Length: 114
Ligand code: SF4
Image (cartoon, rainbow, N blue to C red; front, top):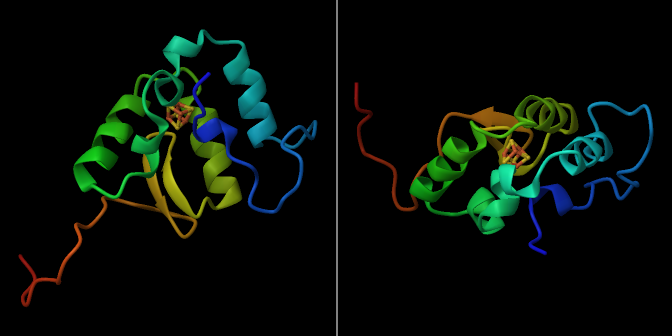
């Protein structure tokens, strides 16, 4: 079985199985367990893509999430938990907030493109 973003432990170390804690990772796990695993892109593909360094890989993970049957629950949970990093629910998180895209490594431009 392939590990996925759904298999990550909670950052606070608490159990992900707590009932009534929606939208929790436990609720997401429960919902994901009801779906054919092949329909969950982060389980059917290499989960490293969801935590990739390459901007193009991150964009690919975001695109793959769009067809996920638990995308809304995944996104709501990630927003609630303020995920520190990775693609969740089709959005890229960095330090708990959604950012539009991952910046490539290297020096910033000397002037902003208008
Ligand atoms: S929305 Fe994306 S990260 Fe969340 S479970 Fe689906 S494929 Fe995985």
